[in-house]
Amino acid sequence: MRQIVLDTETTGLNARLGDRIVEIGCIELNSRRVGEQRFHQYLNPERAIDEGAARVHGLTLEFLSDKPKFAQIAQAFIEFVQGAEVLIHNAAFDVEFLDCELKLVGLPPLATHVACVTDTLALARERHPGKRNSLDALCERYAIENAHRTLHGALLDAALLAEVYLAMTRGQESLISAEREATTAHTDGAAQIDATGLDILYADAKELAEHERLLKGIDKDSKGQTVWRALT
Image (cartoon, rainbow, N blue to C red; front, top):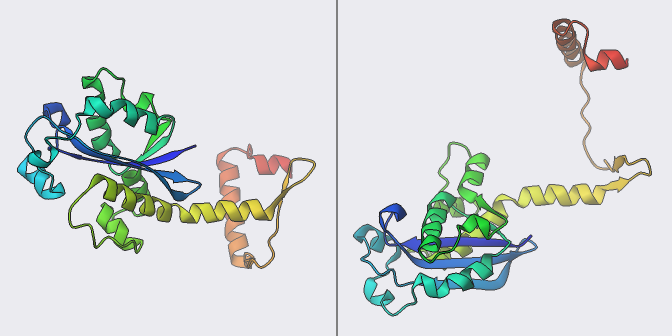
């Protein structure tokens, strides 16, 4: 499945109160590598930009006044993300803005065009509970250079997020690759894993006794209905 890393910049924080998208940045991932395909567009929001938002991304209405409106690039955007898994940091924010923009031009919401949306913020919180998981914090944690990020920018942030996502999921990829290399199928459908070089730890007498005590307790609670007793 194609993967697209996506980010937006906006005129403010509330799409339902009329804030609009001023920049969309998308980067394609191919076989867990950052690809060459990009979708990047500045947009004329047709409304003022909040001072707080302008301080974040540095975009002005003067700069954006001659840029296309969302309606002019909507079809090209949909074609770029069509059928892909879309990766977004704090996805609810960007998806709400994109859905509002699509609705304004008579198109169905983002979810109807893509395979799925993955929230990398939720993924980061699973990996690093209780820690800061902003894009800057994740760049620092995974040693991804972001010193050039003095202002937010949709394409720049998408590029950084792509590197963060690959770093966050690299351990899983290594495990899957190792398992595929070490596993061979038997004719009966079972699998054999080569354990050469692995340290095998055996339970000692105290651990075995504690394990047996726990099993007896479970067996007693289930009135002798435990599967392992029936099979022995």
